[in-house]
Structures are given as C-alpha cells and as structure tokens.
Length: 307
Image 1 (tube, one colour):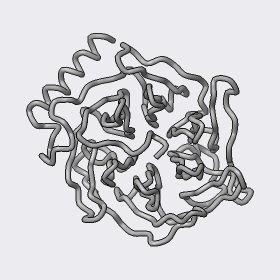
Image 2 (cartoon, one colour; image 1 turned 90 degrees about the horizontal axis):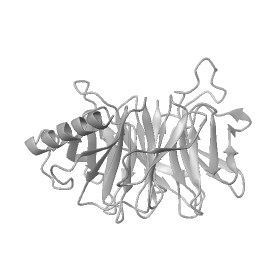
Image 3 (cartoon, one colour; image 1 turned 135 degrees about the vertical axis):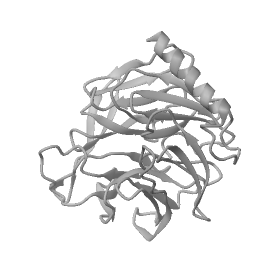
Image 4 (cartoon, one colour; image 1 turned 45 degrees about the vertical axis):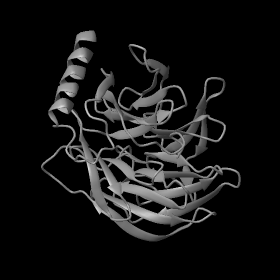
C-alpha cells in the first residue's frame, strides 16, 4: 500500500509539473501540488471538512472514513453507513449524511449513532439522497436522484432538489425537472443555490428565498465533453463566488456571471466530489474512485463543507 501511494503521488506530481494537470493558466490552482491523500477504496464520495479532518464515504464499502492531515492512512469512522454518499455538518457541527442505500437523510454522532432526519416527501419515500448542504440558519438542502434505488421503484416519481426545515418539518420541492441532480452549493451570501445535473453535464442556478422556495432557474454552464472521463457531480463555491465542480477530465472552475470555465485541473482518476479543507480552507480535497487527492489553491472556501 505504501509503495502504491508513493507511486501515485509521484505520478500526479510529475503530471502537474509537466503542465498536464494545469490545463488553464488562470492561477487559482497552485502548480505541482496535487497529492494522494488516501487510497485503497472502492468508490469514494462525499468529502466534508470538520475543521480538523476530512470525512469521506466509500459507498460500496458501506463505510465512512476520516483522515487527519499528516497521518499515513485514514481510519474508519463508522460502518455500516447505509451506503452513505454526500456529507455536511449542521450548525452544531454534527455530521449529516445523504444515504444512498436507505433513501434517507440522517445525522450521525459518536454518542447517539445514526438518527433519521427525513426520508419521505408528501408521504412518499425518497429515492436515494445524494448530496446535502446546510444554510447558516439551519435549512437543509439536498438532491435526490434514483442512483441507489436498485430494484425498488421510485415512489416520488422524479429526481428532486429539496429544502427541508427541520424545526417545522416543512419540505419544499425546489425542482423536479433535472434529470440527475447531484452536487449542490450555496453562494457566499446564500442567496443563490447551484446544482449540478450529471445526466446533462450542466450546472444550474436558483435564487433562494428565506423560506426555501426558489425562482429564476437558469443555466450556468454546459461542460459536455464525451472525449474525457468524468461527469458533473460534486459542487463547491469559493469566497469570491466562483463555482468549483467535478467535470469531464477532473475539476472545472466557473465564473457564474460570465458562464465560462476559467480554469481546469485534470485528475489521475475520475473525480466524483470535492470539498474545501485545511486551516484557511484553501486546500481542495477531491474524491476520485479509489482515491482521495489534495491540492493547494489560491482561493478560499466558503465556510466549511456546510456551505
């Protein structure tokens, strides 16, 4: 395992130094800094920074892992995980999970274990919550495509983007027209919600109201490119409002005002999700199939993985 990690890290560093991984010279991603942080998993997803550690899922492995920077290997946080996919944190710093297998949003703590937050919309079971963010007032926003349904028929009958007020129990359907809504993130002022659609390789924006309703749906960017591996999946935003997301070939950075990709980062394996981390939230953690990578940037993340 040690030799494999060292070999992949050297390969990634060599590609970065040669310019193969820095396809655009926009300057947000520091040259020659892509490094292998963890490896040996089946399908990594859902990275989330808790202030000191990166938490991520191995979906088929049915476990959630945690990596402390500087340590040689990640440790298992808990299992089974109901094939947990995306993660974030609530206002109290507790871990929230979008569970691929159970069709529920849950909260997990070492003291209480797993507790269901919500698993149905209008009395119908959700499909398979995929990714989740929490607004600073506690509003939970999540996507619900059908990837984890297996042989189970969809009860809701669509792929949804939802807002859930845990205090009142009120659920708002933001969009039921995206083919495969996946990653999502809030703008720095929390007035705009960005959602990636994996099926169409697009990112969309919505104006988000205080009550969780949304309006002004608009296309931010279409990055369709069948010549490269990878899809639109995880989405994050930096402090300047730029949208970072997985895309064909690796990671794309978009200026949402112009609707243009301003920088790209190629990854050795197909990227599935990403999260800001590090002491000043300038490091980007990237899950990519069997691996987790880390890259230093000149950008700053917004909040923690909760936004």
